[in-house]
Length: 295
Ligand SMILES: O=C(O)C1=N[C@H](C(=O)O)C[C@H](O)C1
Image 1 (cartoon, rainbow, N blue to C red):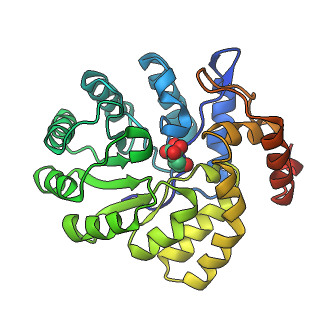
Image 2 (cartoon, rainbow, N blue to C red):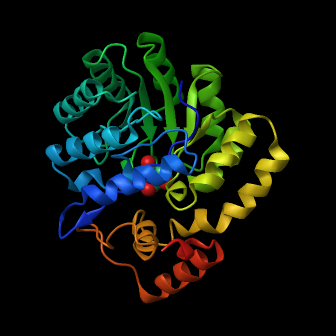
């Protein structure tokens, strides 16, 4: 099953349209850099400002470029259940290895509502692996460990969860409730090592778009139980991990990738460019990690 570093790719735009060539470049760079999988349509991919057709096309390109070399796990969640079902069914039919489905944002559903929502998703795609995506800072609500455990019990295809939160207590409770073999991925870059020490099997971290080899290696060391080695990389990656959030993700990420010649410095409103001060700090950070030497 899934393990290691699975970078959530940004969606490159050129003059407002999805830049398919640049997307292929990102997929290729992530795989050649040693990533163990790739994800599109995560938060980093700006799915909320794309049409369903665009989201499907992004997935098709990623699958085509990955060509079976690593698992492709797209984000397929949307605010409306019908859209989530459509995208998740599409992901399965298109050949993705699983789907990551975000806790529906903005509406602040209760736990019974969340259970029923994810139950509908699971029923729509029997046998297709589902990773729940817990991101309370953006969704406004958290899926409780007991709800996750209930989903796993009733739908064994709910194989894991991506945890984008600083709450480590949640993680321990989750393993207690859902089982230690539940596939948890860290979704907050600088907590990859702490979460893996508690039992997470990898990370879905935007930093891996800058430094795929280092992030992949950190997860490999942690999976092998070499925490001293993983700790070295944890501190090595610390500034890059923090830099991802110097402005709203994926603004810093795309800014630096544009300097690396990998995509245009473009996103969709309401995301806007960062300040000159942040750009200056990003440039210094990128130099320290030798990212600009690739351009
Ligand atoms: O795109 C993702 O998946 C991630 N998004 C998180 C966020 O933007 O809050 C952070 C992490 O990089 C993974």
